[in-house]
Image (cartoon, rainbow over all chains, first blue to last red; front, side):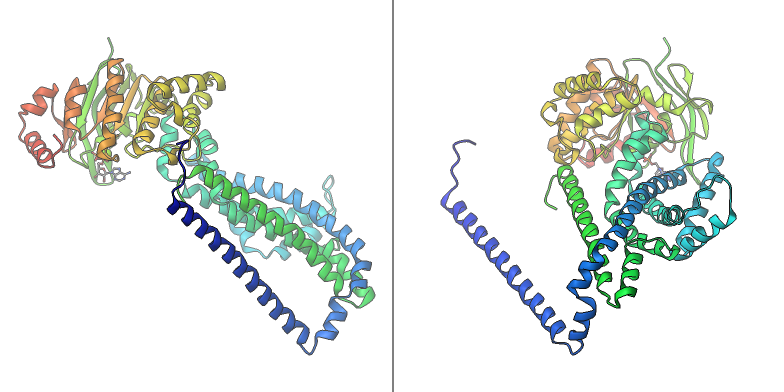
Length: 282
Length: 248
Ligand SMILES: Nc1ncnc2c1ncn2[C@@H]1O[C@H](COP(=O)(O)OP(=O)(O)O)[C@@H](O)[C@H]1O
Ligand SMILES: [Mg+2]
């Protein structure tokens, strides 16, 4: 292998591929510029543009609103972080409970099924309102009455139901022969699930889970209906002072700044895992 | 001495289809029993019953004299003493070959990682897979995958090894390497029940050949007797079909 020198034909092929790559990059760059140029031209050329620019793209308004919106956004980030962990735990637990067989577990399966049906069927905003205003009104001793806590709980309950279904679909997509192989090695139901089924199932459902994560991040803004000052609510307050809508764009930019890298990074991670595992081209 | 495996009057049906009507089988220690029979005659079902992947509807299965069909028997404990290799390998695609082999020793038998890996490497080395220990199953040839599956089944030092048509999914030129491995296990005294369509191989390794048809063992005996001088018309018919298919 060491004394191999590429033949003239191979060198020619590689040179051709390099030229092709340079050409594709050039074409992609040019077409992106053209599309972006047209979009900007249409926007700026539209009759309403001067007014829109003033009310949505005011640099001064953005600068003034930024600290308040950022402080609100920090709350969104914290809610998202806590909720994401809890959602995954709830989703995983419910999905696993639904795989249990045998009459002993019938009530558990029934409860798990009822939970997913209920919370997938209810609009999130209703759950937030019911929990956020309802539970504190009960004045139960020892139960926290913060709007943030109950808003987060509503997010966890609703998204937990979605995630449970996604994970369950992943579990069911693992071929029964994998379970047979695990069980025949003496692994119990639980260990088969943990070491054989779940690792394969979770890898398969990373893309839909990411969807749910991005969506959860956005929906954390809905708890502003409880009066909690998150990015959305902070922007709204700023807007009502200045009669300028730029703070909403500031909030939008902050949300994008978080979700886009999150989705890209996890895409990359799951691609890498896939490539390591499978031999051929994909 | 108690036989490693005793099967008595085992019955298994799927819905209205009775696959095993009444099967008897005795496998003493260090013996190899080969199951032959047409596709759909219930060879896989029988092996799956022994491994408790299926529940029998009647009859008894004893492993080292212990009734494993007793509903009070712990299936996981029974399976720990039996190794099974499937036609389709069923390696775990998300684990490297080494992790496939060490999973059961570590997670079921509580062997420490170092110790489990040392033993796994020793086995992989012996069966010509030392270089592939770190690879994922997808990167292996069919023959290598099946050998890895056999090593995985051996890693827990089973009392009994069940092989279910382990060469049927392989290209012809890869069959040899897998069968050579089984012959080596036989030489070491491993007790095995093997379902196969490779009659030449059956002749080499079998202490007893059992022909399964209509849900029972129709004919049994030494390989010479069953394969060369079968008494039962149904056995003859089956063997003639196999010869016509060019597999003898
Ligand atoms: N899980 C199952 N459900 C229904 N029928 C089955 C199942 N497993 C096997 N069978 C049926 O049992 C019969 C015997 O199958 P099998 O044991 O795989 O035969 P062999 O291994 O000898 O080819 C076949 O007719 C097959 O369709
Ligand atoms: Mg079969």
